[in-house]
Image (tube, rainbow, N blue to C red; front, side, top):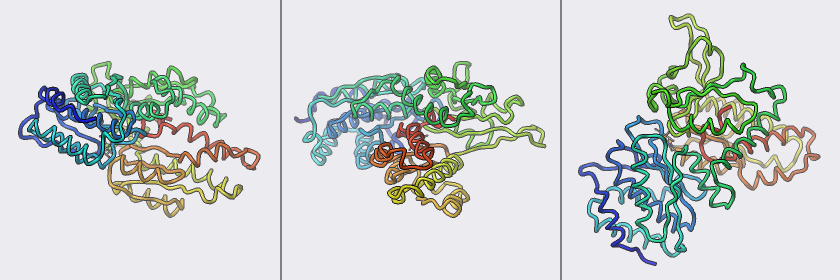
Length: 443
Ligand SMILES: CC(=O)N[C@H]1[C@@H](OP(=O)(O)O)O[C@H](CO)[C@@H](O)[C@@H]1O
């Protein structure tokens, strides 16, 4: 099957390239002021459609500018297993996005297809799932992306609507695995992981609804707040107090959200009250793929209250201590577990004290990668158990599937401290979401 050039040119002519601007493919896709992105997003739709034909799988396309201001927007593409678009495709995406001549657009696509055998692998039934966050330009840009997908014959676009970025990544992965991939399935998976990991594992905290256990969440006036209420509806016994939901006139990412709290070391709007003292709080970013925690303490200064931040480095360190402890217990009992490798991944921006602690005090292998989830995720996935976090709060825990399968099949009777085995299985059930997500880390 060849490219339908006239169909592509006709569709592309509706989305002219704004003159004099070069669009760069950044750490996670294209970003710019939302008013000038129609062409780039349309062409990202073409890239996603071709990727779908090339891989013979469903691909995801997300319209979001994450932690950036409300007037910005952007586009990220999710690969079949829920990872970021393969880095090999980034130069193609960038040259397509910047081609000003329509005839050349076809040429760029044809050359790339020829080089990569896009249509050799494909059946004639590609599919792209499309979603967006809550930005005002999101609906218009989602439509541009849809038209880009449909400009490629044989590929269909399914608009899912408003989602967090991790939800879209998860749905793409679940769709390609042929398991339940609805938003409700997503909540059910987190909810059962939460129940197994938090509620059952820590009996004394069973009554999580008690006011002292309340977690207060800063939703950054974005999609995370909205989705958290969906999740809360099916998680029993947990009371979350969600502020900055965007419904009371608050502006997305303005004086709120993970980026603000982490960079400014300030309370987000509607936090920092005396009544919140010592309570655990969490901040999402605009598309809920970052989280940082914080709490307040009494201080001597004029404000009287100081913010204590748990950024990605601290979250990673706490997780590493926890997993290392259980792993060491199990290794002392079961021979094959001694070969299980466990490592953590940070970027060069990580606090050096955390890296030193992880290496020297905890004895964990630490690898540094460039900034960007695609780099950290890829590296962490090479371990049986890998944790990655950027200081800004992107991160997760990954369990290699083969390792997890052996772990869950191992009879509890082989272990004296059965609890350690159960704990690892339970943690993996909470982090089974696979992509950096604020919702699973909300504990
Ligand atoms: C998915 C991804 O790679 N996101 C990138 C990107 O963050 P966003 O929250 O997606 O804007 O830029 C950050 C640097 O500004 C980088 O730290 C991070 O890894």
